[in-house]
Length: 239
Image (cartoon, rainbow, N blue to C red; front, side):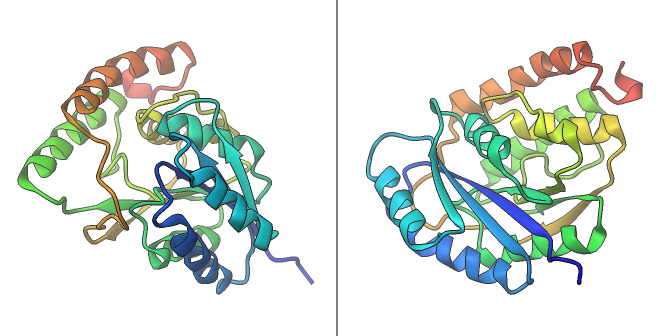
């Protein structure tokens, strides 16, 4: 019999002490329903506030869980740390603080069913008018700069077959890793399947996005465009 596919799920953990013990087991339970073999990579990328210890506790009671620490802060750095050691036939990463377990299960289901496509979530609604306007502006900027057709650049979960090697060679350590991801998909002609998700409330805590980080993303997109051009990873129309 053909062995079940293996799925490596990367979960960056930033100030996650008050939700990691609850959310991670529920994510595992949901994805396990699909019959896939799981590997869950908890990558701590925040202060030493007890999240490391909570991740280690989960690792101690579940052989599918591996606790890691990124070398420094940064969403992209945590994602890259996990992807570098993931061994699954499919790789996934998502925001631990905002992803309901059933949404992760839907993303993995679509990836397993599509066989070869990239799957990502698309948030159609934001928490406030300010966030809606900021997101619209940022996504329009990215569509123009990188010739993208996706609706929501930053939406997670993102799931892809591990043999799409360019997606394992992401290089951004910050929030722009999501733009890098979808820009590479456009450049290489990978089929991207987006599925809509409702507004996703945080399990706990507050968003780390502020005016300074938003400006970094808006301005950083131009730098990323130059970097991808040097690597030959821009869609044809943008070269």
